[in-house]
Length: 390
Ligand code: NDP
Image (tube, rainbow, N blue to C red; front, side, top):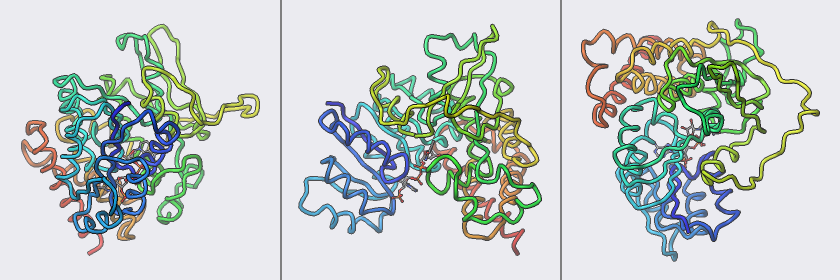
C-alpha cells in the first residue's frame, strides 16, 4: 500500500484527489489530510479513509475537529506548525493543494522527507523556486506537476532532452471576461469574476483566471519547473481549454497535450506516474469538437502577464512579493474595497516599492526570508489599498 497525504484536502484539487483515492481505497494508506474552515468535510474524509491524522489550519477550530472525529482512531491537530509537522510524517506521495503561500512550508517539509510531491500549489515555485528545487535534489525527492498546463508540458517532454526545447506555449482560457469589452472590465463584480466558463475550481483561482494572475503565476512556475528562459515561454488564449499546453522543439515540431477540462487527469497522472492508469475523465471526440481557437492575449486586458515577465527577469525574492501582493489585492477585491482592474496596480506598486529598497529583493532565498518578504509585501499591499480608498 502506498502511504499518501493530501494537504488542502477539503478544496477543489483536494476533493478531486480524494475522489481518485476513493476509487481504489485498498491501494492507499492515508497518512494526513488537512483543511481549513471546512471541518465537516475534513472529518468526513478522515473518518472514511481512516487517516492517521487530520489537521485544520485554524487553531480555534481544533475542538470542532476533535468533536467531529470523536470515537475514531484519527489524531487531530491545528495551526500552521501542525501542518508542517504533519508533512514530516513519512509518506510516499503528498498532494500539495493548499491555496496560497501557506502551502510552501508543508511542501518543503514533505520534500525533506524524500516524498514525491504532487504540486498543485503553484505559489510554492513562484515564491521559492530555486530553494524548492534544491531541497528536492538534496533529499532525493521528486516534484510532479499537477497544474494542467505543467502536467501537459511534463508529458510532452517525456523522453525528450530539455536542450531540444525551443519554446513552451502555455494555453489560457481567458477567464470569465475574455469576451467582455475592455471598457466594461472596470465595473466587473466579484460574482461575475467567480464564474469560470470551462473549469470548476475554487473561487480564488477562478478570479485569478479572469485577471490572468493565475496564468502569470503559471508562467513563472514554468520557468522554475522546467528551467527555461523567460523568452522561451509564450501564452496563447485558447477559449475551449482542450489543448492544455504545447512544447515547441528546435526542429519545428510542436507537441500538444489535449484532454477534457477535468483536473482528475493531471492529478491521476501524478498519482500513478510513471504508469498510466484508467481515469474517470471524459474522452475527447474531435469530430464533435470540430474546431479549436487560439489568439494572442491582449496585454492591456491582462497586465498580470507583463508583471510576470518583469518578475522572471528580476528573480530573487520578487516572486514572493508578486504572489503575496497578488493574494492581498485579491482579498481586497473580494471584500469589495478595490475594483477588478485595480488589482494589478496594487501588485505593481508593491513590486516597485521593494525594488526601491536597496537589497530587499536580493536577500538569500531561504524559508525565513521568503516568509518575511511575504509578510511585508502583504502589509505594503494593504497600505497601497488604504491610500487608494482613503
Ligand atoms: P480551494 O480554495 O478549493 O482549496 C484550498 C484548500 O486549502 C482547502 O483545503 C482550504 O481549506 C485550504 N486552506 C485555505 N487556506 C489555508 C491556509 N491558510 N492554510 C492551510 N490550508 C488552507 O483551492 P483549489 O483546490 O482550487 O487550489 C489549490 C491550489 O491548487 C492553489 O494553489 C491553486 O492555484 C492550485 N490549482 C488549482 C486548480 C483547480 O482546478 N482548482 C488547478 C491547478 C492548480 P478549507 O476549504 O477547509 O478552508
